Length: 334
Image 1 (spheres, rainbow, N blue to C red):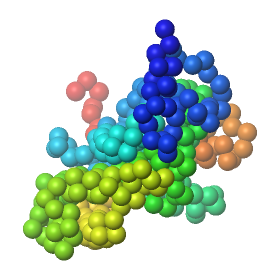
Image 2 (cartoon, rainbow, N blue to C red):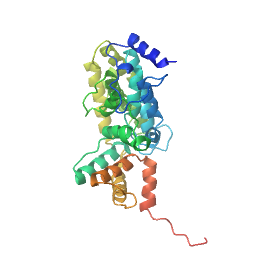
Image 3 (cartoon, rainbow, N blue to C red):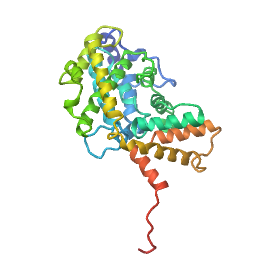
Image 4 (tube, helix red, strand yellow):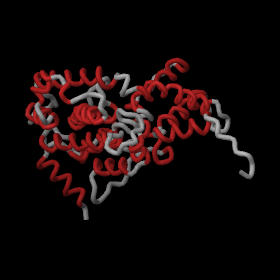
């Protein structure tokens, strides 16, 4: 029973000439016996879904730190929304949905607690003290290549790693169209749901959204942008969108940056993040019980970075309270 072979043949027959075929993957660093049922990209998707780093995303910040209210997005729900948008586009363009989904589900596995605020703190620590940088895209790659499965990594395909590594606007474009689709889907997803969350939080009002851009994007931002991308990418070897919709999307992002992403009301708790993470980093980096058996300071630093970056919001807060906040004194027997 080689269902995988049947799926691979369907890919060759029905996918776009520009799609990535699972049977033609550039492969894994360590060869594995092929699955009888799933293609290489399906297996990678499943490996990501079942890894511990994926589960921890449910308690990592998207925009609002450690939201208590049930309906705010977390890093996990953001990831699921990215995957949904990316698959919609990939299916319409006859690209490889399994590769697209694997990249989307893995793109933020290396994100720090407290969202980008945590990322900036780790980056500052490394710049100031060790002459290196921290980037969540590279950390996501490190999670799947080194950290997961007790230091053995997930052994993912080259195309999945490439898409994870290059998913932000600061990175080079991915080598596959599927990776490019995820990069667009990431921006579309957070723009849409951050507006929704900000309105729910009372940080902005819907009527304050820039009307010149909303007239272009209409009442359903997702439908407008996704349809535009499909229309301008169908049958082509490049993913793109119209200048009109691109300008409106960029303008809406600029509005969100000024009114939400650096809004002192929305971000008031972020001022506490550097104190918390710097204290935790210092504690663990110089804790002899935590730092044993490393051959160099570089290894020791990386171990601390991996530990801090892997924390959820609530785990980091809990550790900080236990280590640095005094407990109440209770007399014995009381």
